[in-house]
Image (tube, rainbow, N blue to C red; front, side):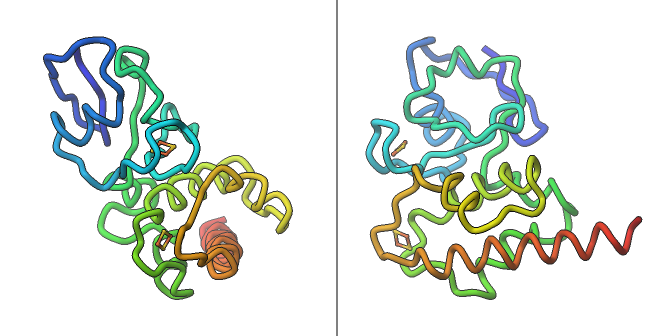
Length: 161
Ligand code: FES
Ligand code: FES
């Protein structure tokens, strides 16, 4: 089947029952998307499917064929291909990780959140990220990073308006 991942088409010869996560990591070679629980409970495997945050560990690969898949490796292209996405910059500036295993999932979900709601309040951020687990407990810094990213993106929008 054909998969459109980060704006590139990939031909993969896999059973339709394989998970999207497994195919992304082992056939397409994009290992930024992480395997955590494998049951849809931790958020480590989150990718964007047509812009919507999706748990790739419980998504059959066949259901992603013909749709636009964006992984953490493709997130920078959502802003400026030569630069980090403002969400990535904010996570670095706020030190919003320790081991960083959870970070790709948090960033991908944050990108989706800010695309549909550029100015979320803290409760909306918590709700959007509630399915993500950070075993290192960096939640306060993650929340600050999301708020900082929203501010930066608003400033950029003002500058280009
Ligand atoms: S690995 Fe997919 S939600 Fe945990
Ligand atoms: S930074 Fe280690 S799991 Fe979140």
